Length: 109
Image (cartoon, rainbow, N blue to C red):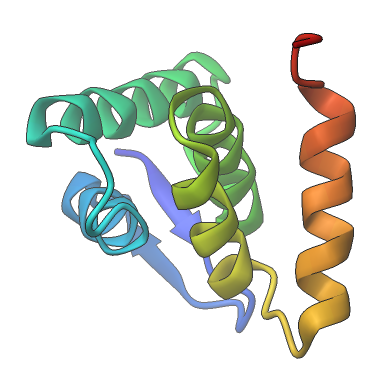
């Protein structure tokens, strides 16, 4: 059974539904289908299981979700990052946007 260690130290079973709920909230109003969100969540679970560890850190789950969202929808990525990384102000958004742009520069017009 795959378990997640929260930042508090508490251990909980991995719940695919929690990933779906978090990504769905970040993707609200975005052009992502339920199927795309469920596939993203399933790919997160698969990557965690393939790691071979029965216990994963909650931060690892968040990082994988962010990596998938960066490929799928950059607005949902920033929304998810703002909660996951506990943004406190505009500078946090600016920093994250700079990181996102550096990882995936837009093609020239």
